[in-house]
Length: 440
Image (cartoon, rainbow, N blue to C red; front, side):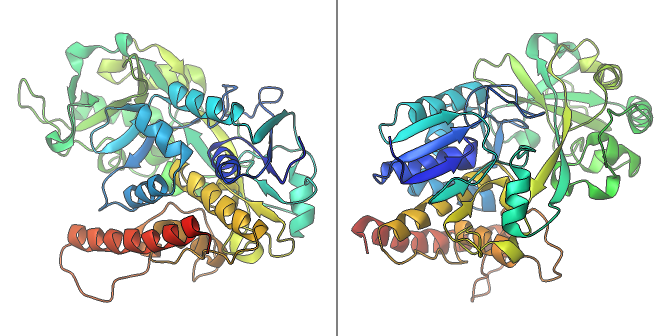
């Protein structure tokens, strides 16, 4: 099949981009190097593999990522349809059975009549219209081609870490309980408490535990949104207690007791047989993970189904290189999508693939761009990537209300203000969807 567009990479961004283009009648060639070649973080041959957490984060419209998810739903996102189908309990968050989630997306892509999947690594830009969605672990074979096209010898990069997964039946539930913070949700988390002595001993060992070798790693280069747990331990004895191990809002439902620190585990599959150790992204050696995490009483005999891993993430200098449609300013036929652009997070990656595909489809049809405004989350994210920080120090960014256009009116109460921002965003998005559906 001859293709109108080539998409490189079948992660969240690439799969979404390919699907949106195909749904609009374009013939798409989707190039994916898995399983012939795997990255250090990937283990599955499925498309849209979730390599870190299984959570897509908050699902409320008072949360910026909740707004972004709702925008994607209304735009007909494949990722969001799969996420809703394979949702697992996670309090106020949207978490998924990661394998079922990826399988649904893979099946949809492979059976779409307008998509041809081409296996193997791509080492040069395809001819014609293309979207490069190779992710934060872009292969070494393609990096020189991107660097040459961008006119930059080096990519900006940071280090990212994945949390371990444990088998539920290996958790000592006599030393843990089910519950959500402040009683929200349906007791979706396994809570593993520690008293002060246990916590102090744990932090001491964690701060001095042996790390796996990672070339060029320095604490200063760690992305703050996905910081390894051992780095947090080195930053201060109470850093973890005010971060992922904060005990606030968590009491043992039987004894009513509060604890010095609480490690939370979140369900990672629909059956509830696999749990993610929340906030425990790490690059400790595997034996050290067993030893140090085993100091958490409920995890003393935990069976690790996946150890935490550390890997390099690569991203472009978006404000210098990309426009608001994620296209190369120097070569508009080439767009980028996903974390390689400098968006951070699963939902944000999907959103960049969505926007890049919608705008490319408009251009190929001879229609004017939609120009998603800064009042919408999807538009604000693209404008952040193409405009960057005022300081000029561009860093990867999760969607947040700080990058969305502020309200003209003054509203007291943060939740009420954010709900009003979301209400305006969805109204503006509705007008864009009307234009898209009418072909104007």
